[in-house]
Image 1 (cartoon, rainbow, N blue to C red):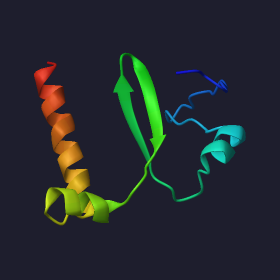
Image 2: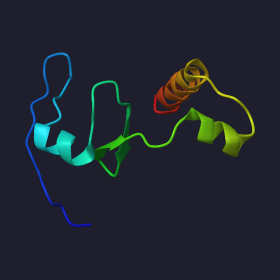
Image 3: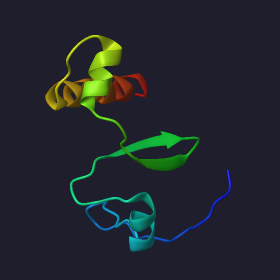
Image 4: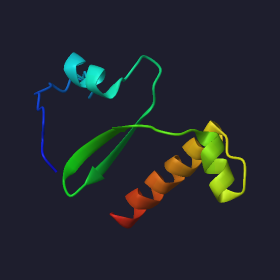
Length: 85
């Protein structure tokens, strides 16, 4: 994978970063868009979320709400925390 554009950002005291305007424009990121954040080999990966909950529901054969998904993520985080202690 070839890196086309790299910019440095600063982490604020609230652990927030600003996505540079050039990258927002390239990925068409708008206010209200959802991004996925995960770790892969000591790298933080941020991806623009594609698709929607409807397509996920069709693949899984069950309807999931944002609340259901947030609960599952929280439970997984707690499980990971317990297993790394």
